[in-house]
Every structure is written in structure tokens, then in C-alpha cells.
Length: 450
View 1: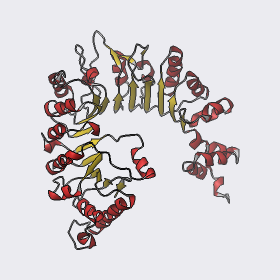
View 2: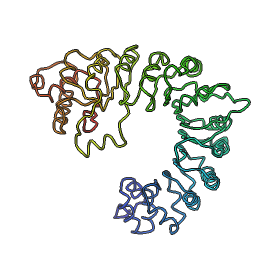
View 3: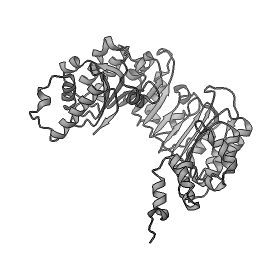
View 4: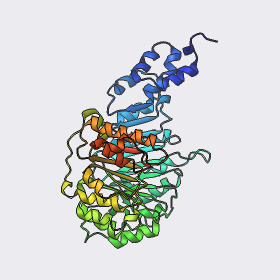
């Protein structure tokens, strides 16, 4: 039995999962055995967009380290793909490529995908320019075909943007990726076939496409491939009078009867309002751009108030929550301030609401307390509260809420200092305590969970 526990490879491999990259580099210099065990955290994820050292290290390292690479992000050049191939990378689980897809790059990329198709779970190939233009066709079906009957594809998420794909190639990919859950075809040009394979993938729950690309006339629509679709991330810029409302409604009812969730960050308020009322009859979840909110949209949401379970808005920027944690509590810039009483109508009418995330909206506590919210099953709340505008005040309210939940676990109302305190922190906590299922709260600093 070794005296030093670090002489045991099992302990070293376990420890390697928790150390930083810099610490792992130091450990690799101890011995050859340490080098093998601590290579994992260094080489597990390679991001060509942020790790300038990667291109410098590749020419001098041993091919043995290629076996540790599982996630590759930010690939933009053919030389980077070539480096991965030369390293003997054959066990990738995630691959992200953003490029213009010239022929040489495409050939190298195909080779890399072929070598890793048995282990890939997430594949992302995007055109860098982010717009449609003629491009060489990508034939992913030849890359994702089953290697062996006992080794089917593990791909669960596929994202292709602003490239050209044949319809036959797409359906072939669907056939040979049985565990596919989400597929993103934003801006993809689909070349039709004389006879479309009408294969339906029962496992795909999430689809990201523009409306126009999903309902092309002629062949069965793209949505026909996804009978169990639950979430559609989509967008359109048409005027309500120009939008093919009846066609979209018929396609959804025929081919995607289980569709309940829509996310749209690229749709003007008049069109989204029109769709909520006239097309999406059975929605229970909606995520949209808060900058597009209007009185008309609020009224549209109240058209079927009992349907809604989740109402959320996109956060305004990447790293939204961490920015609040790091930089303090900025002033709310809410363009809907003068009509914020209308937002209260949602909480007073939508009794089945479980999640409400309007992070850029500031509520008035006086208005909140006027009429009770009917959404007693609320589980997740993300809003700002007027007057609760410092980190200490927010954390004070959260602390009172958490203490109150602990003391009122049975749901019985008991007499305690929170009931008598009239500070804004106590009033907010008192309001939150009305919801027995509430477990996630954001009021402007960090996300708090019970």
C-alpha cells in the first residue's frame, strides 16, 4: 500500500476532474504518470476562439493527447481542422465550426466528422457571414450514416445555419440519428427533391427555423418530419395581413399537434400579437423580445389566460445574470413603465402560470399589493421591483423570504416579525411567501434557488 495517496492512479484521475488548467499543467510536470492523468482537464475542451496557445502547442505535442479532446469550439480555419486530424482526435462529443466552407475546408471537416461520428452528440456548422448566398451543398447524410448496426449515431443536437442542404440529405440524417432531440436549420436553403422522403422523426422535440422555410409550398412542409415537436424557435418579419396564417395553422394542426412552446426573438409586435390570437391556439409557453411588448400583445396574452404556463422574455445580452452579479444593480430602463399596470393583469388572470421571467420589467409593489395574483402554482419569478434597487436590499428581501419559507414549511400562517415589518424588503418577502411552490427568484442581482 503506497504511503502517498497520490501514487494511486485512481485518486489522481479523480482529482484531475476538479483542478484548474494551470494546476493541471503543473501536475503534468511531476512525472510521466501524473502527465497522463492530468492531461484530461487541459485537453478536454479546446476553444480556438479564446485559446491562442492551441495553435502554438499543436506542432510540438504528442499525438497521445488527442484521445483526451472531447469538445472543440470556434473552428474557423482548415489548418485548425487539420491539426485535430493530425492529433488523432477520434472521440469528440461536441464540435462547433463557424466558417465560409470553401472546398478544401469542407473536405477536411468531412474527414474529421467521419472519424468522430460514433461519439458526436452535438454538431454545429454555421456560415460565418450569417446570411444567405450561393454555397456548395453539404451532404451530411454520408457523414452521419450508421457505422455498424450495434453502433448507431449518438447525435442529439444538430445545428446548421446559412448553408445549403438537400431535402434528401436532411431526411437521411434524421433516419440515421435516432436519438436526435433538437435541430437548428436557421437560414438553411433546402433544395427540394422530386419525391420527398416523408420520414417522421418521433424524437425531435425542438426545431429552430424561420417560418418561411418551414412552410414552403409544394413538397410536404419541413414541419411534417417532426410529429412530436414541442418547441418551435422561429421568426418572421411579415405584416399580419401578408402572413399565411391559415396555412401555418393547418400545418401545425396536421403535422405538429403537440406544439406547445414558441420562442421568437425576431418577430415584430404586430405579427406576434396576431399569431397569439389567430394561429397558435394551444400554446402554453412563449418567449419573446421584451422590447417588442405592447398593450396589444398583453391583450393577446389575455385572450386565452388559462393556457399559459410559461411566459418569458429573452435576456438583453449574453452573460446577463453574471453581469448583474459582478457590476452591481443598474438602473432599470423599462420602456413599458407607463403601462406596467397591464403586466399585473397577466398575474391576476393567468391562474396556471408557473414561470414568469420579465427581467427588463420593473414592477410597482403598491400595484402588486392592490389585487392578489391568481397564479398560486408559481415556481419561477424573474422581475425587478421598484425601490428594491441595491444589492443589500435585494438580498435582504431574499433572506426574509428564505427564512419565512423555512418557518412556514407547512404553509400555515404564523405570527413573526416579517408580518409586522413594513419595509420594502419585508413587503416583497411577504408577497413571495404567498406562493408555496416558488423555488427560483431573481430580483436584480443573482438567481436564488431554494
